[in-house]
Image 1 (cartoon, rainbow, N blue to C red):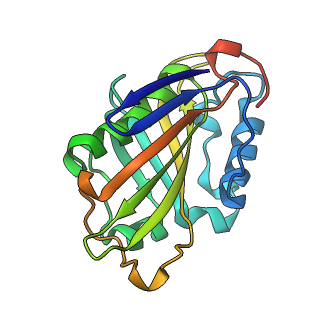
Image 2: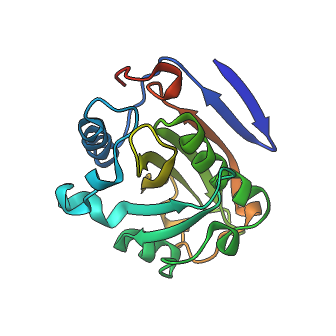
Image 3: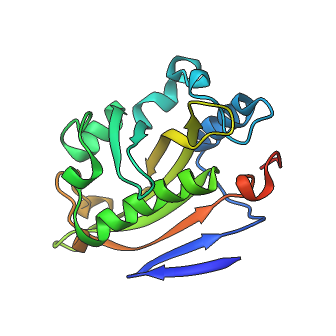
Length: 199
């Protein structure tokens, strides 16, 4: 197990871990595992959002990897994500949407999914000036264009957990890095370190 800190972000690479995933995330993880078909990472041809459970689609994001740094362009954005953010960011890049530590946090988990060729789980807490907060978790699942190639796209399933103070949590409209409090990124086992291993 390796730990790498980055300004409040804890990065954990693990060989064995048990996560209590949201049922929506678990559903997409099961789809990803079956789509691998013996490969480390499933082929992009296997990525068909219409084959996923309908309840998943509003929480789905598809991001195109532009380089190894974690820079991505968002190709598909589900309705719930549009509602939460207050805008449809389809077609925009991560460096156009985020700045500072928050951009580093977002791009870190995309870079990790691409380099390790494995699912990545992240969680963070968003805070607002009025004291409201909400916890969000993401499951990032890489896909590749060629067998055993570098991932070219990743599917993100993001869910927002109920807050203990729901009355003080506004709809998300603008997030700045100072609104994000810490975070955790976990690389799930089954990537290139153990090609062919089940997760």
